[in-house]
Length: 255
Image (tube, rainbow, N blue to C red; front, side, top):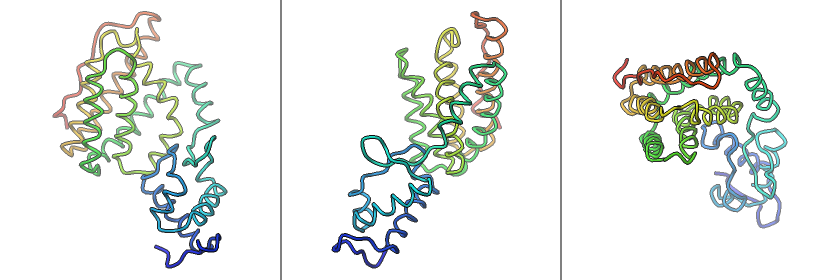
């Protein structure tokens, strides 16, 4: 905590504003503030850090200039997400060619398998409980479209539990296209009454993370996304007619 703050004079000591900027950068590096997340207001930050709003304002401006933060329309500040033109280009590539969609699933296998392994090793009890709550919500949600949102939240909660801010920022580059993929996975003719199977896949991931079995967590992700990839291939081979066969869910005891 800085020793002094020049709040009484309506100005900010450069040393104090730099300290505030560093505190915010530390939160970003620890994953406490994730890409796209809106920061608390100036007053709340000032109270949290025991400095003046002038110092907070100067620190925020410094981080905006450096590209870590961006202003939100209507007021406020948000952690910069690595989306934008790159995300739009990826979306166009994936929509334009089936092979690109399958490539993205395979990349997800590598990234999310790694994240699940890390989550099994590093997740806090609170993070594991949060993944469990989202899984429960997936099981209870009906066919009103909310299950896709819960599915997306599940994958993001595993990412958060991995304890890697670098992975969170990488994930932000494909967050929108990932959301589109998850929505597709919960629509007909893709699903054809396979929602229960999908939930079993996610339960296997959660169970492995909860019991701290890193290998099983990574294997469960690979099995789940491998099934998704097989469905994409099958649907592309027979347009408009999703196959009826199902793959068994990953074993919760697999190692």
